[in-house]
Length: 326
Image (spheres, rainbow, N blue to C red):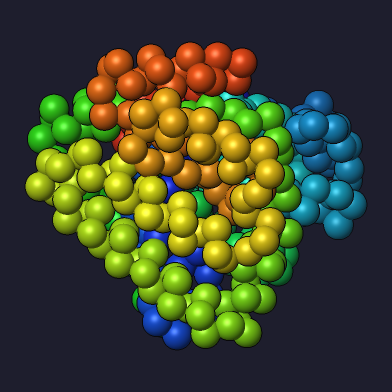
């Protein structure tokens, strides 16, 4: 049996600039972290060596990758000559909540399949191949940040170069600053799931057809660079200001990102004392993240969101890994 694990990501700044329609023209950058919430995949030899058994929100029993309905499983098995296995998927957080679940799943699956075949490939290779599957093979209108975050893990600054290469740089702070970052971020589930592809498709169309959207994304990149500089000076409180500026910019990117109950929930957090916040992921629903500079403000925000599920915010540094192999 083999068990792989990959972490979910929380993006702080620069989201949207990792879409090819933008970074191929200007380059892009994102600052994000991964948290201690994971996708797990287990693999075990199947009883029938000619079968492939897949268990996720449904169960598939097939004889060839060509019969697999799950799009990511289908494309992954197409790349690997594997039969006679049983794979089950579990996750700490449901899909459609803005934490990059589909890309995290893809990264964990590739790590699992390479390990099963006793093939070593670099973490960069896994991240890039996950991008190839989701963006090139499946044609999803998504960016690259989720795959690289799930693969590498940790608090990092990602640069997306026009030639497609991704530069990865860890954010180095003193231990007290990492602790402060953990303590001062709170996340609440809005109860609204979303289709990231629908939101991102609108953003992609806007980027391709609207110069003003390019200008907004360039400002988002500047925010990500500013945040990097402040964090490296151990100025963690700047995150609140950065999130507040990013929220206003992101609302201009697509009509489906915010609106109605999402705006109301965001304002609820700000009125309770949070200095900034954002809707995680492409938008439209999922988790709201707030920066709360003091313990008193944190408790005020928690009271304001007492009817919403809070997700503990703990930094992960592991990236994709094999946690069991026998």
